[in-house]
Length: 169
Image (cartoon, rainbow, N blue to C red; front, side):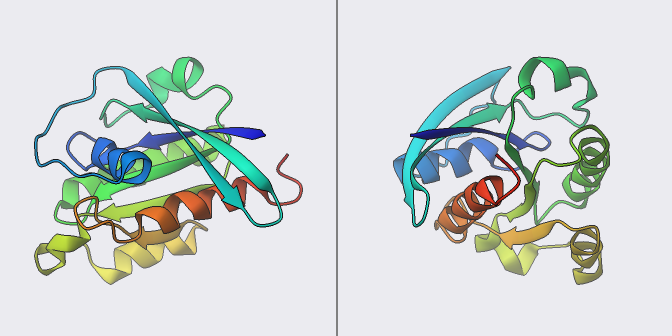
């Protein structure tokens, strides 16, 4: 079985832990518990043409600056999910900074941007032009909702396929 480590990165309160819980256990809880340090989950999935793949999912504590954790938590990462809250301009700005750092340090590592809380889309403040900037820099944007499950399976499966693409190992 192929094993791949992925990390979820983003500021506090954007829903990283909730997305992982929705994906791994298919549950959602409105109770908010802040992650301290890192929490690791795993999920096995079958991918056509690849067989069984085990995703080791690292839920990193929310922060605006990931430069200090690169050696410790990001080592061995095969892919990462940037997570922003669609109702928070500050979270999108934070993720943009994280993306710049990650693009410099992990040039060949595939990633996706998850714009979370799609169930609150009427309250989203992120402009389409800002999302277009991410896509223009080569990062795919997926709307997700840990509450409803929208886009969650697609996001993790999509990243897994990017990590397994020929030439990625």
